Image (cartoon, rainbow over the protein chains, first blue to last red):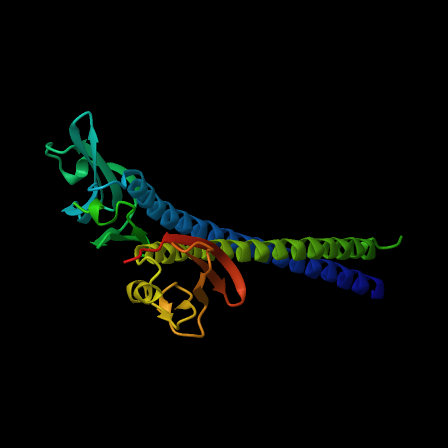
Length: 162
Length: 137
């Protein structure tokens, strides 16, 4: 009888240990999953914010010549207009936000286009631009509502403003 | 016949100990990766803020007071400082992040030079050197 009782306690202890082991496995898995989710979300947000603002900065730097950078209203609000002359023909690159996307539209200056004609570049909630005395301020709101701002001193100076 | 239960218990105990060791290493790796990711995100923002400060300084041709009026922060005659909270919104000291621009001697009379540094507490996140052409009127 005593031997049977001890045997039962041993079995119970083994079962308890197994339960503790299972609980530990589950908690480590859940912690890992939580950390991984937080990491991917944070990295994706950082990528979206950095890429969108650096994309606009790179486009401005490429086109930063005298009388080539200006602002207008197109799409859902502000639009950046980069003007270039190719073989005597004037072409415009418009960068703007429309229907939740940062878009780029490259066209001849005299063509008539609508905002949805632009190529989708990145998801974005909004684009706010200001150009004052050769200082361009770009503010991009991402799809999560985070706003990222960058100031750019136009190399063409005041002449870059049309 | 002897019971095999103590042996099974011993086996499970060793298993739990080995697992505890592995779990401790995993948790440490999780925490380290989380901290590294947060630091990278902060550095991304630090690069943008430093870039903006450098561009504004160039635009104002080294007029730190005008730069502070344009971008924010305060010029005390020796350094231009902007404080940011955890969401990179301008705040007052003590703050999560600090941008400091210090004028430096370029060694050339018509070349302005400054060092822009962004810190998280005492920990440097990013720094760059900016030059501009001084205009003589």
